Image (cartoon, rainbow, N blue to C red; front, side):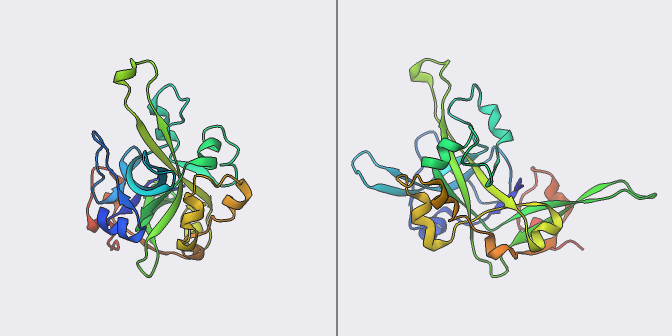
Amino acid sequence: MCGRYVAARAAQDLATAFAAQVQVREGEQAPAVSWNVAPTDQVWGVVERRGEESAEPVRQLRPLRWGLVPSWAKSPSSGAKLINARAESVHEKPAFRKAFATRRCLLPADGYYEWETVPATEHRKAAKKPYYLHPADGSLLAMAGLYEFWRDRSLPEDEREWIVSCTIITTDATDSSGRVHPRMPLTIAPEHYAEWLDPDQHAPDDLRALLALPSDGDLDLRPVPPTVNSVRNDGPELIAEAR
């Protein structure tokens, strides 16, 4: 599972890294840098969409709400439960299969958090110990994701506002990641960005072959302060090594 992550780079830096155009539509909230991204937050996602004046897909860096809301959902509240999609079944699950076929994205991250359960003892209650996992070389993670469009069909046409939401694809964790939590996010290598984002690429087996472990599954991890446990806290001090 990936339930909290760090996205601390400016939009223009991300746009340069992914060769994308920043696209923020009227009424949308541009995500701020964050060391404690949580479900339902606005995050930056990289997508490829066809423009109104061009038949060719345009790569965009645009705001997405973390927690995928299927187009057929009755309420956007379902998105809070769909922050992750399992790689083993993402092409089959009703909530994800249509997006996997045509609406794939990249979700930039510096690293992510996981919590290790510390058992109770005679003198101490059970607790959750937070860790920060990230590439040792400071490189950017391009987490594999899906995105979807939703609007409330119970409202009059002129009152329906689009919600564009996303989810992160995960798999079994390895190496340092597996020590803390059994799941971890999957990533896409730079040489495969175009294939993954291509809206005309629909072959499930070819797409699944692009999914890769971040840093080949060997990430640096360090214990971090328990202040990260609260989504109200933010700042670079959250990724400092706990003493």
